[in-house]
Length: 183
Image (cartoon, rainbow, N blue to C red; front, side, top):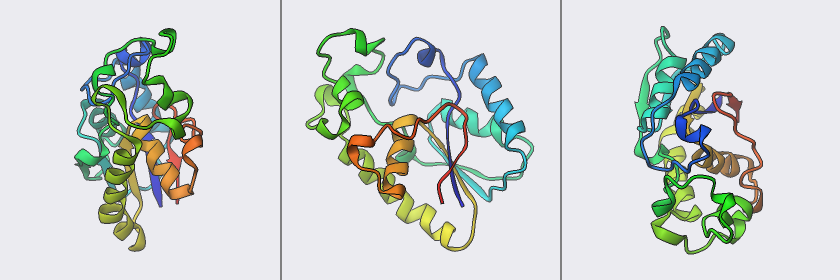
């Protein structure tokens, strides 16, 4: 079985700042979310956990799996999507014609990313390679795999596995510290 989870809240989440590759830690609420998720899903079996190396995902995985003998392996391909020069931008939707908003409003039209941001094609290529190389062999062997990551990165995995079109990229409604069972 494959499960995914988004990291707990950060101060940047609370301020509606774009995080991307910026390494922002969990805040106290995010840590509590991970602790609550650990209690809620304590009976869910995992053989292995892969997570983003960014501290917000890594700390979430560590809190979530504390006291369980489950290896946590980081992989750079699970980092959040890079938003380039837009990382740190607060309330982008309050800025008329902010070019990064195309990604959030009409992802199928997000072409030639502005300001050094990563394209959806690049995101899908790296997460797809990770799934093919690391996850599929484990699932084929009957293992239960957990991925702890980020909203856009997790959406790319959901879209690939469930054959969701790009226009519905954000449709999964990924919440912080909620476990999603994929296959």
